[in-house]
Image (tube, rainbow, N blue to C red; front, side):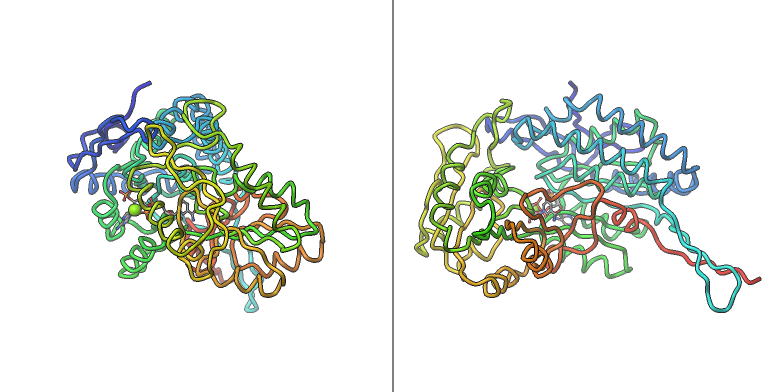
Length: 475
Ligand code: NAP
Ligand code: MG
């Protein structure tokens, strides 16, 4: 397996000329490899070449041909799935079983949008003046996709695939901690027949590359996944020339368990709804609300299920929880834990580093957390959950919706009317009932309130990569 070390521009790897990035394997704390970051000339070359590729071919390619190429990309991604999974595991410490699932998910996203190219229609509108009126969904030009390190490969795919399917060219900026699988995507997609320049991949620091892309006059849309703080920054820069934006940002998602539900099953399943990916998940169900009559037995079962999780070497098939992505990420989670200790929360389990190399941290269950505490209010992005009891549905929902975030949520009940009522009341973009499943390739994914603007996945994402044109012909 060759590990990519340079930006992928104009159909091949080339020197970036920017600051090098040293990648560290978070499970071993050893240096993995150095990647050349993209400097100013590489950024300009990537955007200009993407614009040229759009104008001179990709935009006007017959839809059936675009479908064929994107299906080829999906096929090649499946052929290289193990290589992608291994790279992901090494660069961010993702357990290999999850990394394999996510490599497959990336390929599935390309399959979905390959098929979507020829099923993406406009409308004919019977305007009152007569004549003939119809709409077109037109590509925008060059899209900048800026992605985070927690699900590097699938998120890169779920931004690139719909943007390409809609006829745009893409400049992809992976997070500094996770450039390898994004670079592989560029290489594999071009080997599968994507014309030169249609997808460029620029590793490098967000503050330089990010700002250069967001302010570049040839970029028409920025599709970003990351923190709410950087999302705000991008939105304000994009306002200068009214670039289109979609932002998938942070979360502090609720997990609501009613006594009428199969709460034993909820207790068994819920630890992975917050601890999967070591809690570094924007959809992590980090605030649990449990109806008081089942609170104590629920907590007991939840803790038992948490203690049974397999933590350790991400290269092992059975591992469920790997390390945090970097030493800084662990330090930031530990600051939250120090705050919880100070404010008198009960540590029902976890809270410490296991005695092993790597940036590991035990899954931590907090009880007696105050509504004003940082661990209750803020996104921790680590393996920490707070569980509180509730008595009254209305009051509980007020607290659920008091969060400035609104990304995802789970609800456990066997009462159909309650399921419908509460599903409508929770202010979030993605809600799951009697499960924690948040991501479906075919369905829209994104947040309310400070969790974002716009949607990834489904046909909603493809709409978001087009401008809507109305054409009226007099008769
Ligand atoms: P981040 O700091 O916002 O970084 C995300 C991406 O933005 C990275 O590629 C980063 O590059 C880049 N970036 C940094 N500064 C930038 C700037 N000034 N202009 C443009 N781009 C810039 O977030 P993160 O720390 O990687 O990820 C954690 C956050 O992402 C959490 O808050 C989480 O909730 C959120 N997230 C949300 C979703 C969702 O779908 N809603 C999914 C995953 C993660 P560098 O790596 O080089 O700094
Ligand atoms: Mg950051």
